[in-house]
Image 1: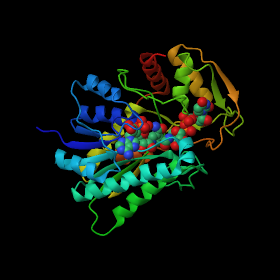
Image 2: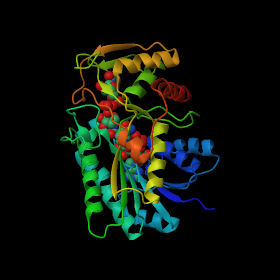
Image 3: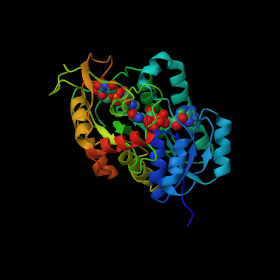
Length: 341
Ligand code: NAD
Ligand code: WQD
């Protein structure tokens, strides 16, 4: 039987590459679109090694409507799309707001137009817990009000969500959308053949931790220990990237089965919050590595604490994470070791 084709934009990236693996293993035929603006083809060699097959790739920009049309026409019979492609660096978005709005909002608009032209009616969209800003109460549910974004990056995710809700509400709409709000994705595939490939000095905690343990960075700075949390450091919900990838498989299947509302939103997290210091100590326990770290000043714009209420994901989507923090961190370390120095 032929596999159901799912277009995966940004499929060469960190989360996309893991989703491609899970989709294929679940019986789908992922088709990758990527412009390699924040990834390398080597990631796809890893995917190929894991799966034992080459996944079709189209090296195009999602803002290029003609190129996208050509992909839809060439592939034919695409049943759904997972739209990972976006620019994701919060700090960079403050420097280059126009580029972020163009790439993140512009690419979604272009994709939606082409999907409509070709009658493709299922979309999973990569949203983020960043849409909640600094929440008034924890954990955050999908009903928790969003707050004004504190970066153009965050604003693009809110705008994309709004666009998708407006499209769903329009008369005659046939598109079904699932918005997945990821918390903090970490770790790598168990094979250590794919993982996160941060360019330059990592801004995110886990790659900085693993690079410090590997001797690439001298010391981790913990950004502030005077927050109103039990140990004074920020709290986040760290979700293993393979668990997160599996949530996409469940979401795609739900869309194809035409279950639920025309647009639905789900948190994807573990439901647990861990502080930065808990992560540091869990990393040390999981890997046997002693981590050189110091407490430094708070980083501007950081949310003191956020973690997911996953009741809706569990009960409605039927999705639950299974990987512990220690297992996630061990996988990140294994991946770092394969990258070397
Ligand atoms: P990533 O940068 O590793 O992957 C994104 C991929 O999209 C890259 O391969 C990049 O080359 C590609 N891309 C970007 N713009 C493109 C365009 N216009 N056309 C074609 N390809 C394009 O990022 P990621 O961590 O895998 O994130 C995937 C998605 O999840 C993004 O939408 C991101 O905003 C969202 N997200 C990420 C996190 C996180 O912490 N990693 C958290 C929440 C949400
Ligand atoms: C985690 C914690 C830092 C580095 C960002 C985006 C968010 C989402 C995920 C896309 C924080 C602390 C970090 C370091 C540290 N992305 N830290 N020392 O800030 O929760 O979220 O990525 O949607 O939108 O804002 O993730 O990994 O940068 O930080 O102490 O060297 O680690 O202060 O508490 P963050 P992060």
